[in-house]
Length: 429
Image (cartoon, rainbow, N blue to C red; front, top):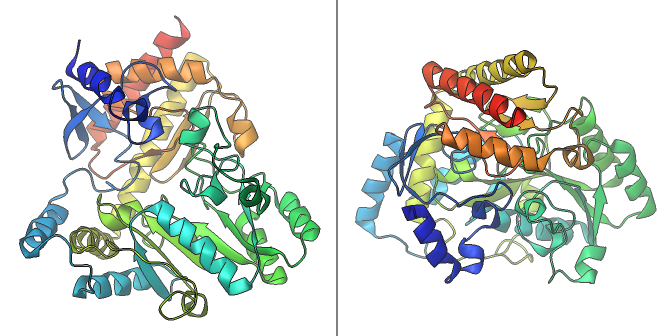
């Protein structure tokens, strides 16, 4: 029995399912989850001493690779001054100033501790600002585990085969309206059927939680127009896309300005951090400036702020990072497509910059319904075959992969070869 297997057996007696987040349990791909001991640059190392090329990067934050030296240095310096104060610090001000400078739509920002906390707060603020109760979200988009969002959610909930979680009340579900992603007509129908009742539309501008799904031309622009016409707030959940698709996130890349933005992952450099921000008149509703209450003892934690500042400053000062990420993503997906053609396979690849997903389906994947057409059992076998070849993928079909600048051209070539071998193996089994 491997060390990972031993740890997992023990963990199952101590934690629900043996994990602290559902997708880590490997239920969607079979086998035992790897227990990670360390990571550096483009590599993960498990408790059994195995090394893997990393294509998840802690689900997005490690955009510059693991243990990036400037972030490490910032954390080492910060821990000398204590780990938490529960009081304001200079670094919170510097972080807020930097986020506002980098993200086009943000005029004021509030730091929190996770992406889930950020989306929960953004919805509360939207309801407080508009005086309306209902929100529109999109099937397959995942905005954390807040009650309002666990309605036909994606990601770990899809993986577990239970898209609607017990414990979410009917009243909460009643105020969450669902539309298919990339379907403007459905959104307009919901607005017409609920006049003057919808506070906000929230979405991932590029979806990462039913696999990587891109907005079709005109979709984001159409949402912005609908929100303007009906006095609805548009919320971009940029927990995954923020600071990854561009310095200013997806909103910069697509030139669409939301009213509120939620952020996480990269802004903490790998530490637990979230934030939400937007128009000043909306953010001034947040306590103590306004009546919408939201608080947190560890919000703006000095260690997390130090790591995040080092990360964002580097990205802000090195725009070539995004050129490199685009190049890596293009090289990898071009190689994957070439292998699919060579093997006579018609699987779908969705890709933008450093995010991509190989879908085990021949259908074009534009929404939750088309994503569900994937052969998930085949993906599980493919995942294990790639793992055997030293490549660590997301352990679920319904997840985007996230690349880092630590991937060299030689490593990209190695991943392409492994992919071709793995596909050949599972398709001929």
